[in-house]
Length: 262
Length: 289
Image 1: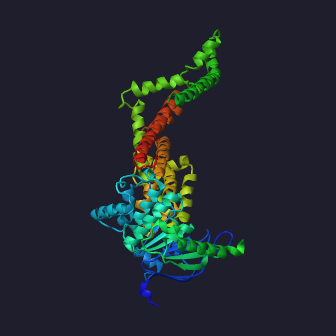
Image 2: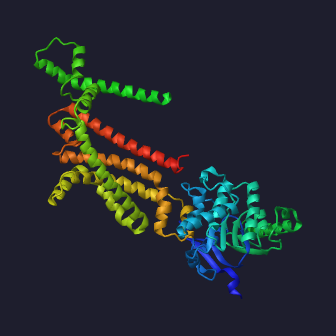
Image 3: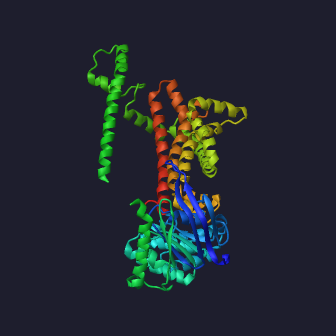
């Protein structure tokens, strides 16, 4: 096994949350390797542990058993080395900061100088098509623009790895289509490894090099589907039989993973 | 604007009506005795009411008596005169501000400690709460005596008592404020591996700003109460509390009420000042939109 090429190795990870109703198993025996430069979509119904898995990779949750390696390090070491940018379900912009200063926040924390900060913020705004909006406050922006600003923030310190947790879940479909397209171009341009959690089938199928279909109770990987679409695909591929075929397979996978509790 | 002023004036008018009625009823028997002492047996009800509302030492002075006393002591007396209220209000204000500054620093410092070191919440908080269950009236003389042992006199013991009352609401409010960021905003800081000092300065402190101003307005009002209570205990240097004490010694109810209104006005001005600064700041920081 060429371990060097794997950005992320997940080996038999289980994670149990203690709750007042007794322990809840969020993840059970999850194993997955992710190669550098991949775009992996995680799809599944709520409660399948896809967000938990992402949070475990980010060292925001600790697995109960099993091991995760990020760039050959433990998640904690990777977090301390600032190996990844994380995009949450909500933009989580700080309301007292302008858009530009929100994007500069990780740079400030990492001790990047002022001039360099300004450069990178400018580049970040351009990257997510928010040029000229730097001086605005978050509440002056639409939901889609806010989420774009949060993507620019996650990319501002140029991490190799981008972890995205249903970033477009709260947006309408038209905006989401546009952002999906932009995200794909961004991925193509930067060559970053992206882990993308979603509960939308078209989004998962459009965005991936691999789709990980997960099923709930306990959260586990049901099926992994490989992709043959080119990297620089457009929204048009969604009309092709291949796309519909993959979407169908995902749907079957989701249904099979669910069947026992219907 | 007018639909806010009319209800306000209505309430004010009702308040005055009740006050005058209460003053007349409470003072009437006293005034009747006074008439009897002077062998005045031919007074009318109108005379009785009129006199009851203009007694020298009434049980409850009428509003216009307090107003004229305030006019006499605030405007007609030079501010430097010990007989005027401005002189005493300045002493109280000074103690309040020093006590408030100490209380705010202590309150915010404790809140920072409680938020940064989780262990402290359970070890420190009960003591902080317990400190406020001791009646300040009982504690104030002891603080004066203890500080006197160390040759600390003058304004300091009174400022200390003001600080004692004002730090508590600030600690409670700021602890809440520092904890106000939502989990996502905190997770974000964690993904950047921010130090706890960075989390404090870049997230907790700015997020706590609305709580900061709410805490400050309660804290400054509490400091004023503390200063007045301290002046009742240690009255030789004057202050509004000393005026309250002197008034009650000599049955000068009008003087007591005038000092009371002066203290209330002072408190109102301080709170309004903090509110004003708060509104301007929060507007600039885009909280109020």
